[in-house]
Length: 155
Image 1 (spheres, rainbow, N blue to C red):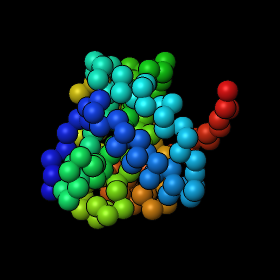
Image 2: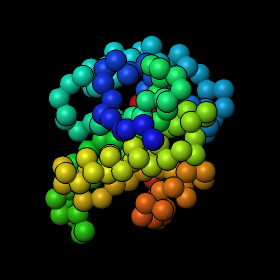
Image 3: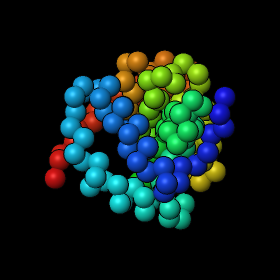
Image 4: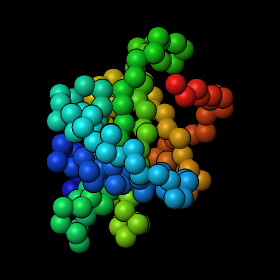
């Protein structure tokens, strides 16, 4: 297996490509016009100090310059509560594997690195949204279903 590494600013276009792979898996034929507007901010995040953002990747073993897998997460502070007195939690929001690189353990290896990154920074727990296809991977890593209802508002 290729080693997992922290994504760098030069990986930004490939990170967006793999994010689109994830988006297309949930909603086929999704637009891609958002990528050009997202690229500068993503490059800045990947080049900047550690902060509360991390992306871990595996280089594609057969395609130089391409990524095989991607995992991205953020640290968030919320006022502490039962079971989470420090208030810091991790949120995984982008996990994708190139279709021709699946079933090789790349996503799991990237997730392991991101979870360690969360632990080192004191996150009390980690949240994510799982597709039905990905749920077995997360369950095997110890994630459980959360009964808390979720709502969203687009601004």
